[in-house]
Image (cartoon, rainbow over all chains, first blue to last red; front, side, top):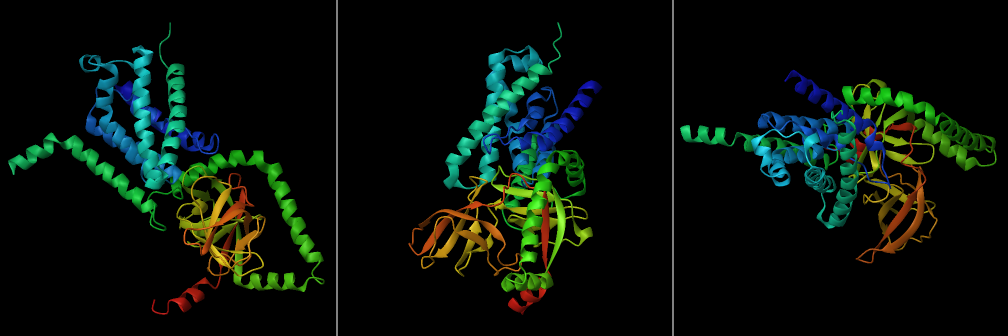
Length: 168
Length: 271
């Protein structure tokens, strides 16, 4: 139990710092940045206190906002995906998720990919529409969410594969 | 009463979500209006400190480039100095700016240019008598306006920000307009409200106009790339490529207008 708490605290701090200091300076093709801090929300234990989870996601988004001077856009997007995560889990993993605690490293790759992709695209769409805040620039919003989303999903998958605890 | 409490308990997750979501929306909307985002900004003790210590490492990699920039600027200033007797006008304008404006050097510890509302963080703050509404420039051109300060750090509203409005004019003419950014390319900014009567050519230099109390007159901004009339056919919309490379900014100068208070009180006698 204690182990889970420490892992998540460390993950929180490392992801926020990595996002602010490294990943936000990538600016691939001028504007494409991965937002991998949502990995915290994606990988948060499934058996949890939902109130605590939503609150932690809010804190996560807010600390990223603090670093990036973006008002509250990251906080809003993070809270939203944390709130609808159970729905996405049920959609992508089917009924297994309710009966037993699944481990992400044991799930099928295809299911994991859909789960990551849905969460990432919802997050990015919300993030960029709030950030740009202008309906006449809807194409720019879609373009940014698509390209940054692909980048984020790739990085998230890579990180989960690299740091998975499956040792044979 | 029982019913209400039951309802609250049943929907507590949703209510918490709603509360936190509206707080974030509140912060977001605040950040979209100039001078309102007081709480969430990177010029505080924690984030400013982290950015500064990381920047301390990264700075060494740019030393060569910074030296070259300094050399270039020294050359330019020396050229002005040597030609002082022949070009009376230049030396005159130098003297008059010295009296009205004060310049403070600072180092950029965080820069962003990929989102629609970009801010920079610099390592000078209230302790160095930096206040809101001071202009920030480099040797090549303008960077932005200070919009928030803490003890040791200050946040700069970059000209690459959809809230940024800077008074600008065509060099060697007095037709002025407003400099804005449409959020697309970090090299290109837009100058709007230039009257149709202005003669404008591709390649013309654009400089700051002296109408605001923030920037001195004739600070370079960029050169005209293209221009066309807007829908009403009375004003030009001009695309400008910046002299400054906004993606690579190290040392900056903060411009303090010593007469700002006097000019403002003159314009708003009631306050």
